[in-house]
Length: 322
Image (cartoon, rainbow, N blue to C red):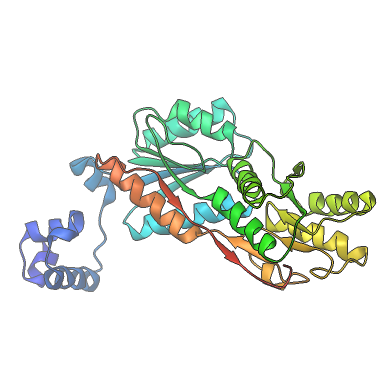
């Protein structure tokens, strides 16, 4: 083998560099890799899979395109998988049905994926994935409880809701309303619970939640309702940044000063939120770390380990709106 001759090592050492690089001393590994680059060597993954029964493929199935959380989570998973030496097959489902999810999982199995990451923002996706993931290592990326046959990686959305609400309370706000996302979404429910817990701990009234749909339009419409009620709250915690953007626009159109008259907080720290008018206080999610943790847990599951639930903390980003 030309690579072995040029690097001055055995064929077995080259094989270990390709398949188990952690077993090779760094200096030797670097010499073999340099020889591969010089010779323009590329590995035949199909042949490797036939020998080792390992494809180095992960499946990723998700829904929620167009929303910050699911989109950034998938991007984080793909980057982390590539760095870990895996390629990904990605299937995006707009409105997942039983037949669609079954076909996706069947296709993943046919292509020999070693494990599957499911970005499951709501109950329907999680239920279908649970039904069709039998027999293959699976990680659910959702703020839900783990169960038999799958692992869970999530951001602590309840903590995020508490952080936002406690910040408003510390600023002197006593009447704090919440515009949630759809309540079949795990994240929406957990953020709402965190808001309620913080209000209860401070012995403050807990208003009825105003259920939105993650859109700027729902935030703008809520602004109209709040204005028509004639008594604005001290603050509004919005379930995501897009809702907060709409709320700010509705308040601005009515001449209401933010944060002078009312304070506003969003969620996600989405691109550009620091340039809203005013710049938006928000809760940032660790999407890069979430993707890396998901891949770590999935690879551990592939190798037979049983890692516990991974629950990552968000952080509050304070800007002018609060």
